[in-house]
Image (cartoon, rainbow, N blue to C red; front, side, top):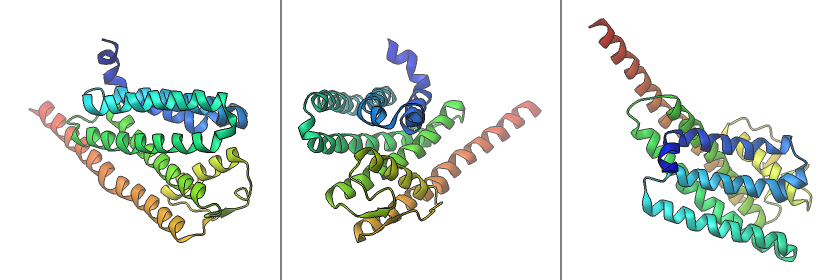
Length: 229
C-alpha cells in the first residue's frame, strides 16, 4: 500500500508541509495566500498527519473526519463569504484539535525511537514547529473572543490577514524566548497564554531534545564499542 511505502518518510513529509505553511507568504501575495493557498496547505498538512498516525487506527479515523470537515468548511467559506467569522472559528477549532493530537503523537514516536536517524531529527523539529502552531491558535482564539488582547502597531487593524501573520509571528517569537516587545499581551488571559507558550518551548527543548541527544550519544558509543570489539 502507498501509506506503508510512505510511512518511513512520515516526518519528512510532515516537516516540509509545515515549512510551506510558515513561509509560503514570502512567495505568494498575502491575501491570496491567507484566503486560498494557506487552507490548501493545511489540508495537505492534515493528510500528512494521517500518514503520521496511520499505525493508530482510531486516531487516524479521527483525523480523516477532521480532514473531511475541514474540506467542507473550506469549500463553504469560498461559496459563502458572509459567514467568514463562523467558518474561521470552526477551522480554528479543527486545526487546534489536530495539532494538539499530532504533536502528542510526534513526541511519543520520537520518545520511543530506539535509533536516532534523519527521520527522528525531522520528527524532533516538526514537534517544535507544531508547538508554535498550537501557540498561534491559542493566541488567535483569545484575540477572536476578546479583541484587543494583544497590542502592537500592526495589530490595531481589522485586516484578518495581518492579524493572522502577526499572531503567528508572536507565537514563535515567544516560544523561541526572543521577545522583541513589538507585540504585547494586554489582558490577563493573553499574558497567561504567553507564559504557557514559552514554557511549552522550554520544556520541549530541555526534556525531549535532551533525551534524543542522550540516545544519539549512547548510539555512537555502542557503535564505537562494536567496532573496537
